[in-house]
Length: 482
Image (cartoon, rainbow, N blue to C red):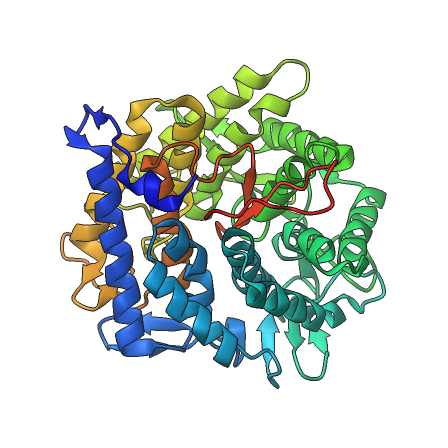
């Protein structure tokens, strides 16, 4: 299979918008080119682009590491057949990507974007520089685990190896979604380097979690790395918790379904989530609430919308022949998240939406009305299309393309907006690196043939970087796309 042949292959029409799927993919490549070329023109080598200001955007998440958009975009460039752009990105990585910086970084963000992006680029292209850089960065992150429990710090100074946690995080706690979203990348680092330490760090996190009692079977978002005890009892499948659950499922799938511990942890967690967090609105919409000390907040974040795809991806392995139930739940969450889009003036969804005070799937607070080019709703639609082939998911994907083009495209890239309910939205002037890594990739895969990065061979990390399944009968992994 080649990327180029996938782009040329004739595909059927989608009746709901009367256009050839192939042409939609071409449109998505043009979106990627617009985002990439303007990043290159105005912010090359920096982390992100400010498309209105036409200059670079800095984020403290990466310290003084540079090139987040370049590394995040590598695999999207490759699978879209943008090989000249991929080559120039590779050359920048070879000459300029430097981790020997005296600065504090987010271990989680650097892992999912940089480690994940480099690993994926290596597996897709076979270029050795990406493997070397990924392992080098992985080694730089290891001091974050130097805590009494082995639960890593959220923040790490890359030069000194000194770590700490976010000052706002429940008495110095580490965050579930952050230390729970390292497993896929670190298992591959051990696989590629031959050094078991990366995998050992991950399995130790499992041991700590399995020793702890879970309130109502739920995992609180905060865990103290010194005492090994839970912090504040706040549970969310959105921000602070989300990708922990995603990585339990994907750890099992990536192990070629041999990691039974991860499988049990995932399905036990989903059962508790369904019992205690999932509710149905008066209007019939299923949503995932947040749990704070036993009380529900009837709010669902855009980040939480990834869960529809997760439930669908995990349906086949569900216990007690409940596969169809998991698929129904996935479809209901997908519908709810779609409603959060169609109920806005821009047809893009807010950062969070509520089910109280007489509203459903609508943001009621000004600080929840923004959209920053997030991928989670589109991610779920992609999985639902791949696993059901119901054409409505492609229709919803096309609607998202149109909304992005109408509202977020500006002369020099793409920008988030401050209020999805405004007929004249104000742009936030940031082209997030994950827009190229995730949003555009998931849209492209929704309209590609299923044999481009097939789900039975590839697992997507939390930043949508594809990693191959580690086959139990193979020491090496050869899933390169020519």
